[in-house]
Image 1 (cartoon, rainbow, N blue to C red):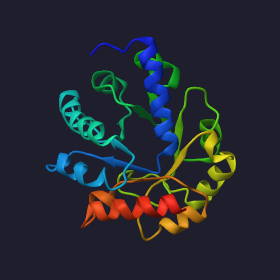
Image 2 (cartoon, helix red, strand yellow; image 1 turned 30 degrees about the vertical axis):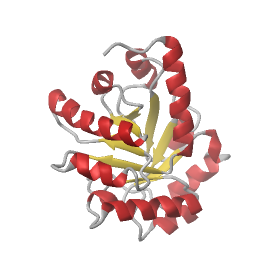
Image 3 (spheres, helix red, strand yellow; image 1 turned 90 degrees about the vertical axis):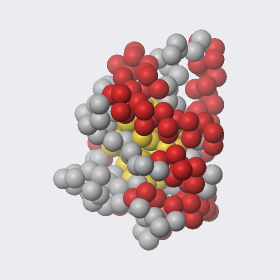
Length: 226
């Protein structure tokens, strides 16, 4: 797919940044047999961003699954993110490429993908939060894990202390959006909000919910109320 013209790319980036600034609920999801139906349930209920994240897939399989997510996000007006891989992002043209600490540098990702895409960063320590809050080319960052999570086996959870630190570093909050991540569910959401977060990333809280749409709606309502 050819890259958009410079003017169109700039307009798309501005629109995506506006939508990112308003986003509160960010879902990470992998392959599942009912992926399209699942997304059609949770997106209108309040999910603002969907990242496709599943490790160790061959490129063709990852592109096929990512295209399902991309289609759902377009239909529901949500932002679509790809995790880690600039080659997959080049193929499917998401709104966002999310990079971990050991992934490509932001300048290299920009060289591959151009200026249109938003770029997110994962952070797991105070020094990483401090850097991500001002790093050129970064549009948002995630802070955690807040609690241990099976999606990141073996990674220590820095806890709510790092969430509170991010809230201090990212003052005013509108300067650069950031999301708390890691083991967050409806039962502990109030503690995350009390620590200073206004945006969260969830996985199992929706993917394993008995009623994903109802859970997404409750998350969205509580995040908007603060």
